[in-house]
Length: 365
Picture 1 (cartoon, rainbow, N blue to C red):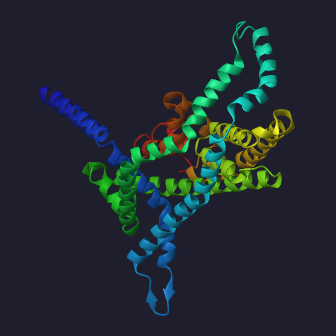
Picture 2 (cartoon, rainbow, N blue to C red; picture 1 turned 90 degrees about the vertical axis):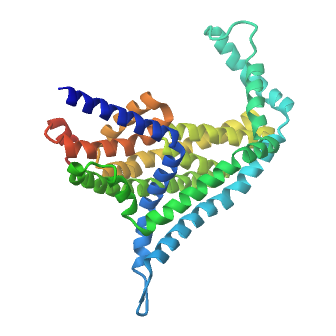
Picture 3 (tube, helix red, strand yellow; picture 1 turned 45 degrees about the horizontal axis):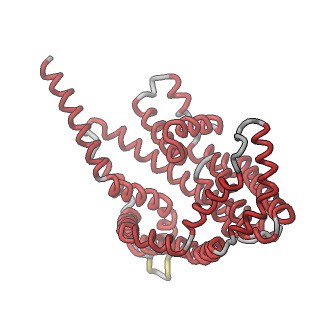
């Protein structure tokens, strides 16, 4: 009995030590996980380059890995080169806003809103909604000034460089040896569970690879849909709004609302001199309508293809999981909900398949 207690105590101590090390080296763990995700996305490219033959010469596997990594980096750099000038011009517009003129433009609509809030006893007599809004706007928009941005960039430039270099370095080796990530994890799995561990890693890699590739296509599709729709209606900064709106789709369900709000703010600051009723309300209506149509297409076409087909889960099941993850961990929980739930289902299938609920939830894996 005492030996059993000692074994349990030893196992608990070992788990605590491992948890502490994971927390202490969390940055390194994040680099490894990011590199693993990028290798999942890049493996189809590696296999594509492996199939290339020039006369009798076959492409070297190491060269295929290099080409796949360079292709991924070129895509990221292209996004950077496209959107940095757009963001810079928008920041310049924001920094040149005349806040006195902005206050005069907002005075009439804010007065009407203020009267309603006082009528419904949400605000007290004597409070000024205009002053409250202008103070908040000024404090937020001041953060967009070039000086503050430059200081912030200098503040984390060193950490960013180390992080990017580490992720790129690890991604190359994960691409060159697709079993390296797998073998590294297998080192921590007890011998008697090697078969289950191998099955878990194989299924995880297959499903998450399809999920992350599908998610990348979803983001690109949403950027294209939103940008095209806004360009057709002649909205300024359509590319920037489309990029932010598509990128926010990483956050399930809540992301489109955040992206749409950001788009309205960007459009309002770009057109504030044109008048509130004459220009800003129509542009805001166009942006909201464009986001609504784009997300209708996303919900009816893109998400079922990605979530249902890639991770083999019913849309209602995914919706409930995202809600629970959001309640537990907020926006980060919502972002990680689907990958985490997929891994949990795969593990449950290997170890708890005797339960009816588990068999039902994992029957399509």
